[in-house]
Image (cartoon, rainbow, N blue to C red; front, side):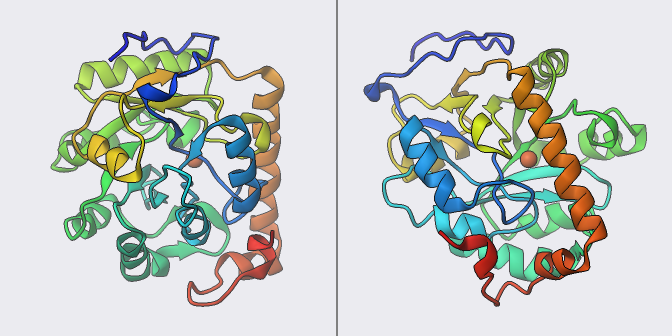
Length: 286
Ligand SMILES: [Fe+2]
C-alpha cells in the first residue's frame, strides 16, 4: 500500500495507477433526491473522469438500481438514510436486493412528503432493522453546519456514541467536499480519535463536484473486492481536495433551491412520495 497522507487540506488529487485499485466516490446524489444529474448522466461523467460512483440518494433507491446495473463500474447498492433525530447514515449493501428489502420493509413508510433529509425513523429503529442485513454503515459529514453536526445536541450525541449504535458504524467521513476545511479537519481528527477508518467523498449534487474527492482501496478492482474491503473496515487511501469556492456556492444554491422547491410544490412532493413499485419516468429518463 502506498503511503498517501490523510490530509484533508491537500489540494492535489493524486492520480492512481491501475494496479493500485479503482477510484471510488462513495457519496453522491442524483435527481432521484436532491441532485441535479440523473443517474445516466452521472455514469457518463464518471466514466470520463475515471471515477466509480456509488450513488447514495436521500431515502431513495431508484437511482442506485440504475447505477448498480452498470457492469463496468465498481459500485455498491447504497443509500443515505435520515433519522427522526436529524442525523444521517450512509448504508452500503452487498446486493441490490438487500437494499431494496431494507427500503421497502423499513424505510419507505417513514418518508416525509416535504423533506428529502428527515424521516420518522428513529436511530434506534434504524439500527434494529439493520440487524437483519450485512450493511456497512458510514457516518457522513459529522461536523456539518447546524443540526447535522453531531455536537448540535448533547443527548443525541450520547445516543450516537454511548450506545450499541456506535460499534455498528464502520466508517466516518473525514472529508466531505460540501464542508469547510475546518470541518473536515475536525472530521479527520474525530475518525482518528474514535479509531474508525476515514473516507473522503464528494457528496456531489452537481456535475462539477463529482469525483472531486475519492478513496482508493489498494488492490480493489471489482464490486466483490470493494465489499470485502468495506466489511473488513480497511482504511483506504483518501484523495481529497478543497472544493473550489464556485463549486461550494453552487452546492449551497442547489441545496436551497431543491429543498425549498420540495417544501413548496405539491406536484414535486407527489413525485417524491411516488410508491417504490411505480415507475418514475421524469427522473430516470436518459
Ligand atoms: Fe449526502
